[in-house]
Image (cartoon, rainbow, N blue to C red; front, side):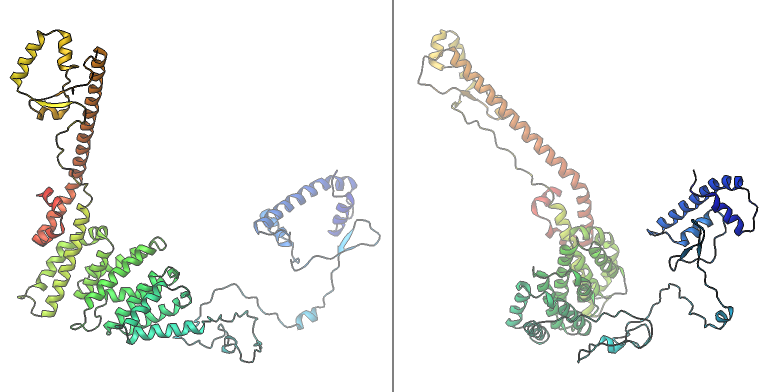
Length: 542
């Protein structure tokens, strides 16, 4: 039984001009028409599901017809539902109520606007802080909130949803606090009050709203005040205090702080070259950058990688000044001995060859540059020394030679002459067993420990007991106790020997690379490198 009636097939045949279709043919065509309809609807449902929709549209039917290589039906769109009307005089006949369209009205009607394709357009939001007056940007009247509270009404153009900027409101106390800190950093960084301010920055809670203002202040002052040594040092101390404060979430602002820190570390000129101690500033900044990497390296995995790449490029670039290379060396050394071993030591020999002419009076007449070269040499020496010291520090401490083992027991140690002992044994053979027991007690027990070889002429004999009538069972028990003590001493001695062997194997295994490294550093720095090696390790190598 098909859902398509025979009469439906006859009506469709009449609509295409077939008026004499027999009932038997219509009845045979009905199941095939149902099959084709089901096939098209299944494909249309697939198109609907792939489009992530739950409502079937005429576009889905057109897609199904295209998949079956059937010409789609023209004239239907998905704008709205189709309006069907029931034919008068027919029970199951419906038709679409089509409107009659006058061609004159269609011709004289204005053309609609062409639809716009989806596109991505780039435009400037602001140029050097000034917003350009282009259609893509919102008018200035909209961005600036009106004083009278009236809303701006857009007159023409497409509707645009505009979100007003959110104001960052600071309390009066925080504003005064920020102004005071910045004033002390700019002009009074050598006073006791500034030290108290740094302590406040490192401990006080409730300062998180001021973090973006401090980061902007530091970045702006560093970019403008590279010639002011005291200002740069004060700014770096402010950064250090902010990092020490446990109540401040400073991770989102590291991308603004790191350029300022790296600038103070590897800038060509920091303060006055001859009078200011910019070396101290670079040392402090190196420790600051290492602290940042150690604290936030697990949050930003590329932080230390990018920093080390920047510092290494500074060292390997011969066009960089010696002050810049000094800061880069100190920065890498502050990151740890492993960084020095991987990045500095492989390039140490060619670098020292290029640095040596700068340290000699014959080739470098400028005293300032010679001083800078010796500072770089000292930084390399300290970095290499710390690396070899850390390498040698992994050696386990070698235990000293063990003294002769002495048993703690209730027996006495008697020193006798061997010949005298032999004579006494001959006398004992002629005595009765009962008399032997009375004189000597249980039989003597000799130590089987390895240390017994050092005790020449010494024998362990039982101590005299108060009960002179001890029988053979007491003697056997004493012998068993002595044997167990001997075995425990022997196991302890074997364990100590194995431990010593393991330690020595590990020492000699790790000593191979360390020995080569020490020899290489000795060739480069001479006896100066030996000051970084502790005495036990030096004795091991010598």
